[in-house]
Image 1 (tube, helix red, strand yellow):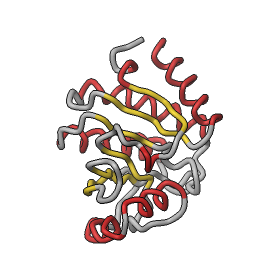
Image 2 (tube, helix red, strand yellow):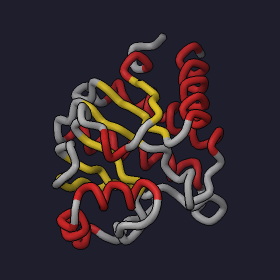
Image 3 (cartoon, helix red, strand yellow):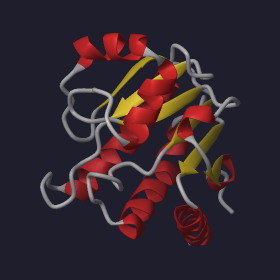
Image 4 (tube, one colour):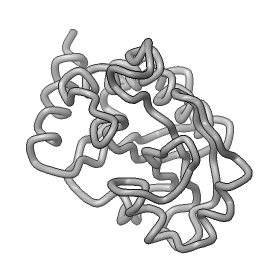
Length: 176
């Protein structure tokens, strides 16, 4: 296993309940509003202050990432990342990879040691899970050596099938 792979874990869980992680990543929409899925869960848990902090940072373009405090979440920061809408925002693979890279770069700049990602763009944005997992994990594996402050990256997945997919994909990429 590569040194970068040893810094990555995949778990099933709730992204809003990662008490041992310094920053969580929001699968944001362009306006940085609350919504369904990850964005809704994080906004509900963080309280109305998160929406207030996000307002001047919007709109985002696919692949962009911005950072705010986490307010009532158990984390210090929220990194908001806009993934591409599959089949609409092209080149979707590049913009998805940019989202992960930009989130990691923000973590590095802020000295964040632990970061939790959801599966960006796989919900309402329709990105195929297998392709998204490969892009996400390959990008993080490639970017981590350039982010020495980030000691741990956790992928927090909604269900067992997504968690298994991410673990298998990580194992395949780490052994390549």
